[in-house]
Length: 185
Image 1 (cartoon, rainbow, N blue to C red):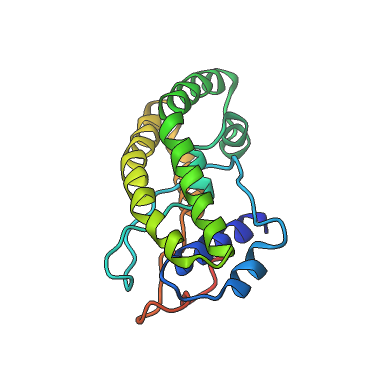
Image 2: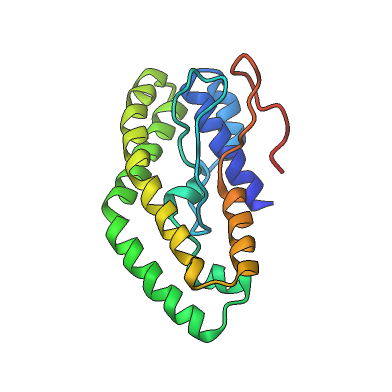
């Protein structure tokens, strides 16, 4: 259920950048505390079908990066040796991507705050920066995930890929850039 709420927040952020939702709807979806970030993991965003070809902004989970060692341990039943190796890789990757990840997180939070304050134009002005940061970060996260093939069994890798897809923003949008065609989960 929490994952669905996070995905819903991501949907509102994307729609907000296109000026398609009112601040009342955004506030209702985010809740009184404005939502939050989690350390759940990532997937890989793509392009919006009806949004004029703009790059999709990442979900909050994607911004945070790959699955934490504890999340992956629980998700795919890592043995102690796998957990130790994954933890080392994960820590190195997060350390290497921390500056860009922090900038992206801050930029998206700024966009959300400006939108919630009714300043849509200023929020939209932040979008190109967020897109550039995500364009730089996303391939690094993808390479990290692909690099797990030598660590995880085929079954574990399949579970991980499925989980990654669940972290990504909704893929299906209406023909005219409207609301999503179906509920993401």
